[in-house]
Length: 270
Image (cartoon, rainbow, N blue to C red; front, side):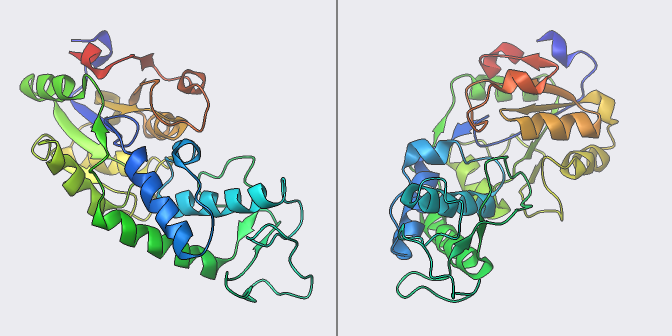
């Protein structure tokens, strides 16, 4: 067993970018949702940098990307088709054939990055998010792949008596079908999605909920993830933290987030 497991009783895993590469399926659903709005596709490469803060933020970033692509960095209100919005349009006035505009104002979305300067009109975002959920629900896992070493790690940890939990920002409804597709539905004693509790990562609340559920002190828990949000949540909860470098971290090295440990493959845990 890896030294980082010394004294650990509960191991909590992130899902997307840690156990599975789900971007191919997510990108198909994102592009289909944008298509429903008459907007250009974003593509898998872009979507890969947007994953990690839940599906609503994912679609918010997709809409902002469309605006930026059409008008540079879009320092002023921008028509989703790429032209300038008529200044007389209000925040909720629909653009014919498209919907409400984006506006260049400060944003405070959970997990927003420094480059997220545009605010998406609420009604437009809700339409885009609903379309994404509809498309993703139809096929959440046919293109998703399990990372090498994951099955070996989960089998080994469970066999060694560790309690395993899953905490993801993905909507809870999508967890079971993805795990079932890989025969992993019986490996986790508890699974939490981004909508299971009022708060999600990087807030420590989901991790503290898991620790309390099993009666394990945070100091005896390990959080395993691929992004700064996983590491921040684990640290704030008092968990030990372990990172994998192959996932989604908005294009930044996860090592820079200061995890307690890092492994190239989860198989190194066992």
